[in-house]
Image (tube, rainbow, N blue to C red; front, side, top):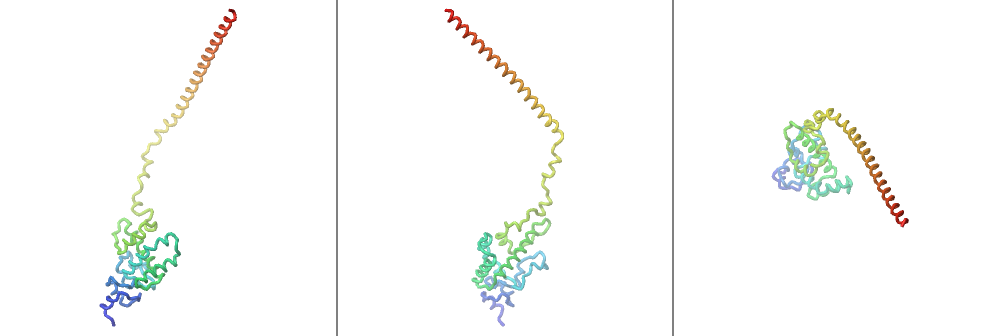
Length: 234
């Protein structure tokens, strides 16, 4: 049978479920993305969680996962903007990966990314919960670049925010209420009274001005009439 040293020198193996694929993880140039031991690269929150396991498609090597994330990053805009259907999108992803010497299907690529997203979400939620020790994951940085700003990653209300209520909730208890109401209720009455006085004063002043104007006009008319009589008399 071939030795493990020979396996390290043949990175182009295209068998996704090779019995000796554990050795491939020791070789950076391995071209087999599926390896039974690749889960050792992550730190699962719950080792017994069924969502941390793959289906019959097998396990991915570290290099295969990095390639999957890189290819997805270059093509994700097509899917986000609705320029391509899901099935065709993953077929293109698998095709690009296989051009690097791998042998994977569209379904395997889609399933693996979904598993990575679940693991990423669990670790983010765990680290965002107050009191928990921080969990490290080898793909956190890559996943942050791809999904760090997605709504499903960061919840609207976290545990820390719920433990620190907004100070504004206590404001009504500290604000004065009843002492200011009497003055507020008297202010419109005083304002209305002043308006009435101002209106009456203006009416009186207008009447006096009109009376003065009429008297002045009458005096002018009398003077003109008197002058006219004098002119006729001459």
